[in-house]
Length: 303
Image 1: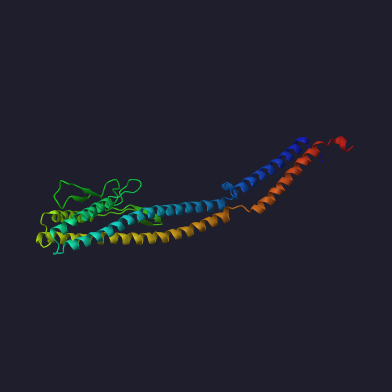
Image 2: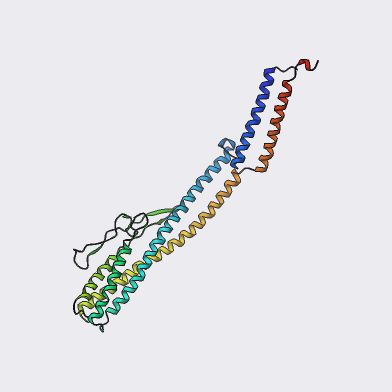
């Protein structure tokens, strides 16, 4: 049987092209360590990989949200812890001031530490994060939660102007966690302190004066109320962080499972690919040699 030169050349070129394409494809797969480079390589497993990748992206977003919230809540908890300690110290001072055995000079000596405590509580209540957002304004993060108006009547100069709304962040499938806090109520303590300081500064102040005892007694109740407010919120924050720690551990397990599945489905069997690559390279070389050898033949070669 005779084969036309054009037919022979077409057949050889097609063989060279097929082998070269397979070598190129295997080289790309080995470089990426992926069995599937385009969906047409395996349509069914491509869909499975897309679903796993989407789920993994969602899980990673949950984990990123949790990490961000934990940083913010840890900072909030730190400020609240400081306030709780200061409130206890301030209450002890007022208990001492309420002792009828104190002389006016004793009461005046308590003014300076109580003023420092008032200013510290006011500062902590208006604390900001690194981005300049107020920590205790609810969702009004650009508004200072506690304002001071020196022109207002004594006992009403401190006002809470934030809100008690929550900023809920998604940390799981159908699960949200508030990322903010408010300190509505702490302004009452500051106003009680203002009234107490005014009485303690007065000339000849005496803890046995019924008016002074009334103000100091109200301030003591204000300290108790503020302490309950702060510690209850701290307990809530602690519970939230424990829940998020558990959630994050669950997300980590899901992520590990997803990554293992992605590897099992999409990873290339390097040994098998290397063997196939050697085979295609050998076939390509043989085709080149055959093409070169046959190209030198003519009818005169066999006569």
